Length: 214
Image (tube, rainbow, N blue to C red; front, side, top):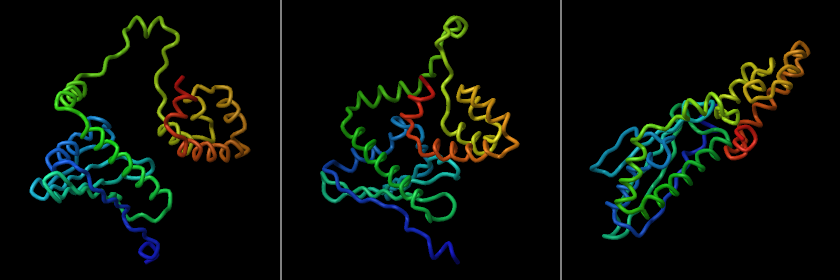
């Protein structure tokens, strides 16, 4: 009963663009070419409805429903709605994340609309090609090569094993990791790890990469 009282309506955005339904529909279908975080889930071609899913940290993720409606020959209405995979929105930060998804989807559709057919084909080919691995010689002899750290994994380590400093070892901060480990019996590292957890969650990807992947 409490969930129903505090439930927040699904974030939704309506906008109209001066492009044909076919052009917008092709752009919507190609969203994963720009960001593979958004995975195709289902579609109804008759009613021009498309659903994508995306992973979200500490949840089962969300669905992105995109509905298209042809208003005139060269004008299309786009409706984007974000749904949680489980439950409803009941926290402000969840709504903020949902609105970020909407902004990203709108931006991706705009980018794809402006692309030519040749540009789309080029993206498809790039996506189909396997990612190149650094040469073995580089892995063996180039001391500057570092595996990329994952922000979500670091946050999980801080939440589950942060009292022992495991996330600090993962982030190439062995001195801090050792200090956390030495004083784990005082519970001070556990409190610090909780702070680290929230700091990592709300840290932007760019800031994380600059701090830990350079």
